[in-house]
Length: 361
Ligand SMILES: [Cu+2]
Image 1 (spheres, rainbow, N blue to C red):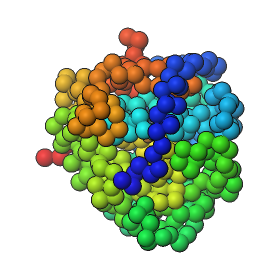
Image 2 (spheres, rainbow, N blue to C red; image 1 turned 90 degrees about the horizontal axis):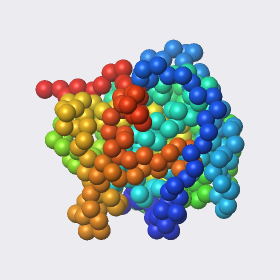
Image 3 (spheres, helix red, strand yellow; image 1 turned 90 degrees about the vertical axis):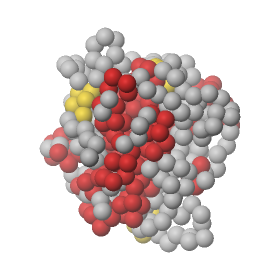
Image 4 (cartoon, helix red, strand yellow; image 1 turned 135 degrees about the vertical axis):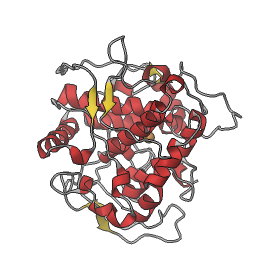
C-alpha cells in the first residue's frame, strides 16, 4: 500500500466540514473568446513559457484566502490549492471522481493564473510519452533550467529496506537548477498531511526507470483501450503498489520518486509540474472520451469511497456527485465537468487540446 502512506481518517472529517466554501472575487478577469487551447509545453514559445512560469511565481506571492486557524503553512494563493488537495486526499484518489475532481482542480488553477496573475494563455500539458524510454527522461525539455521547471534533486542516499523506496530513484534532495531552485522556503506545507508552516526546498527524485515503465506509449494505448469508464479509471490510477502503477503514478513517481513533493500523495501539487502532468492525464481522459463522445460524455462510475471497488462501504459516483476546489472556486458536480468544451450554455469548462491521443490499431 505504498501510495497510501500514513492515512489518518481525521482528514476525512476535516474535508466534510470544508464543503460550502465561499467563492472569491476575481479582480482581473481575462476576456475569453472561444475555448482556450491547451498546448504541449515544448511547443510553447520561449516567451509563452516564461509568462507561464512568471504567473506561477505570482500565485506564490499572492496572499492566501483560506481562513487561518491551525493551518499556518497556507501562506499564498498557490498554497490555497495545495491545502485543498491535502484536505481532500482520501476523498479524491482511488475513487470514481478522481479524474473529474482533478480536471476541475487544474481548470481552477488555470483560471487563477489568468484572472489573478495576468497570464494570457491556456494551461500547458506535458506529453510524457515523448520523454520515454528511460534514457531520455532527464533530458526532457520540461526539466530545462532556463525554459522549463528545472531538473532533478541532488542525489541523496536512500534506504533499500524502506518499502516506500521507489525503484530506480536517482535524486532526493533540493532541485539544483531552474526557476524554483535555491528557494529554501518554496514549499510551506507537508510532508503528507502536515499543514503547519514547514519551510522546505522543492525536492525531486527522478526515477527514469519508473517513467519508462509507466509513461511510454504502450501504457497510454493500454489506457485508451479501456471499454468503459469504470475500467478506464482503474487503468489510469493503477493499484497502490509500485508494481501495478498506471500513467498517473508514472508521472508522480517518475519525477518525485521517494523524496520529491510530487511523489507525496497529499502535497504533490507543491511541485508546479503537477499541473502539467494532470493536464495530460485530463488529455488522456478527453482523448478516450472523444473516441465515443456520444456515450462517454455521460459515462461515469467507480466508488465514492477510497478503493471501495466492491462497493462495500457505499455506492458508485454519479453525475450529481459534488466536487469542491475549496476557497478558490464554486462547488460543481461531476456532470458539470464531463465536457471540457462546454462554452456558453452556462458551461463550467471551456477549453480544448490542440491534439489528442488516438487509439492505434
Ligand atoms: Cu491528486
